[in-house]
Image (spheres, protein in one colour):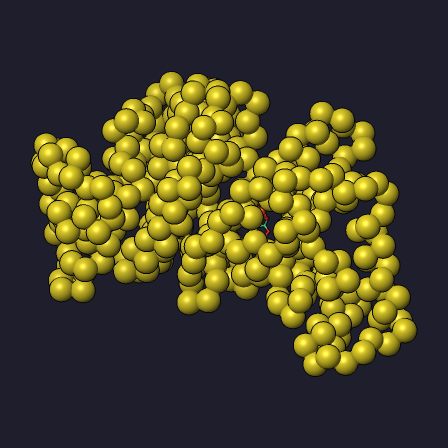
Length: 355
Ligand SMILES: Nc1ncnc2c1ncn2[C@@H]1O[C@H](COP(=O)(O)OP(=O)(O)OP(=O)(O)O)[C@@H](O)[C@H]1O
């Protein structure tokens, strides 16, 4: 509480331009000292460009945590921000190396991304043992939290479509930049104003050119494509599989495979080709898309260009006909295949591949 009070005070002062009292100043300085402590910065390619000016950073209360991080609210250069502090475990050297690698890669990727459906990177600080990433603060929290609040089967279909389109557009952009997310799940999707979804948490993302086998991965089994669980070579299509699971989550408000442990879910997906059950009342337009996206053969899964085009056409149709999602009839497979080679751009797909 004290921390929150201090944070509010500081943020008001920063906004109004009032000078800090001695007590406030000492606390703010002590945070900066902590961040600047022990060890010189490790120089990266564009470090000057992304390196945070710590004199402009005010850290408030902790509001969330990840497996190896704590997330604080803060103010940076008059902006509401979230500060992800990644702690370096002293007792586990391998984990420390892995976390540092993830941090460096997350910053390098986030730094080059700019899209309304991708979390906006602000700055970062890499001064061992403290690593932090500063991003815009998204007041709506995670999509997971939202779905739990709303309860099972309660998101209206029009909203399902809007949320799905936001995610698909963010992922289309990410893939157009040659980046695989590899940990797409409702917990890593954050909600901004007007329930705008933004893709976040690029800790295990990588460039398409750098994907090897998925050996040693710490992604989440319930959302993970079978080829990734099997530690095989993988492509952008692993994100398409995870997108199908997220779409299923939005439609049902449930956790995938919640009657199984993550390991049992991984076994069921890879050895029995199981998927979470689609409810009978699931509109065909969604079930058809989900079934394509979580196909066990990655080549049969559509690209995000096509997914965005399909969802955009659903939106248009829904405007004309409120029953569209349920009365929808999937096009014959050969129609999709014939149409695809012509679809170089999203605009083309929208125009020519209406399902
Ligand atoms: N910019 C932000 N605005 C609002 N909430 C955020 C923001 N960043 C993170 N969070 C919250 O913190 C949680 C954890 O963040 P994030 O997934 O980035 O951490 P992580 O250490 O990578 O977690 P994990 O390793 O467990 O996936 C998110 O699910 C979300 O609830």
